[in-house]
View 1 (cartoon, one colour):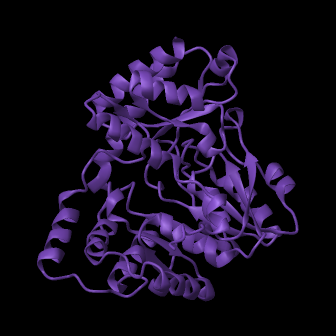
View 2 (cartoon, rainbow, N blue to C red):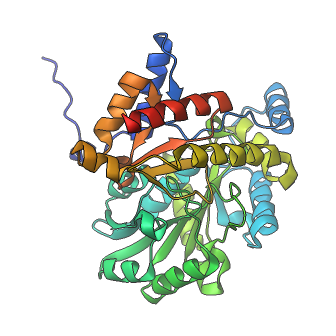
View 3 (cartoon, one colour):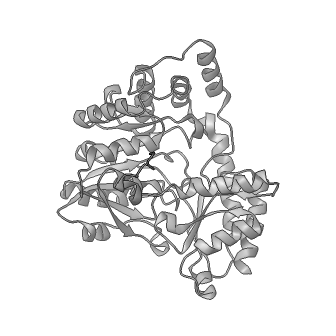
Length: 396
């Protein structure tokens, strides 16, 4: 007699990505014939520049279809090394880099290799949706430290110190931040790193939005602050946001710790193996591009950011901290929720999609239940129509 498989207990401790689920729901409505404004996914609407696409086509037509080194080709890791030195003044050798199938896999590798059961990872909120789930999958425990709009959605040294315990192992930082767009200044980051180093924490620094910045904001990596900070930092990044290569799935982990590099490569060898060969060739070209090659993308994001700020400036019951990086609006609707006698934004997001055909993500997915996140990395006409529908719904 056949038996229904029983799931492992750990499957009850994690959830599917809310951003992916809402993006799929919006696409289903669009397939049914509805005019949907989908602002749920953090995906630039542009295509990669011609040089990237041409490199991929040449590789595919040239038979570049075999296994590569698990950690990525040497030439790709050399390109990453050159980009880190050029853009941030950080000197990583190719054997200090593991290239993975996207920054998400690089993060998973890092958490899996650094956390033992019940180790604690300090996680400022709002946070990217996958951090707590990946930490739990690795056996660790996410310790959520809320940051609010009044403080620019930034973790403070005082809040970090209060969250520490003898089990604290990691500090997760994400600047520019998804979902809030917050960018830490040199002094803010230095103060956090000082606390982390004093307590022997490893810093996992997700820098995938490092080139999506709005002046005068400037990206600073924790690894750049001192020799001690460099040693303690695990740097994560990829090509998805800066080069509009979300579906190409190329990211990396960089660390001067040879044990972590060996462990991450070994883990990857037993799971996914090497990243896609053709995508590696394309990413190699991307990381060698001069900054002006993608300046048109940042110009478009800058103009759309202005549209967002102007449209939401006068909506009663809301607060939008201007994003200094990334391409999201993270809108507190706490005043609206009080008026509607609701505790969280989830129900509003459901109504907005069902009635107004606008997909945004409730802040509960990011540890901030009184907010919503929407992407402005979409076509101008879609964004303008979405903002009209959104403001009308908030005022209704």
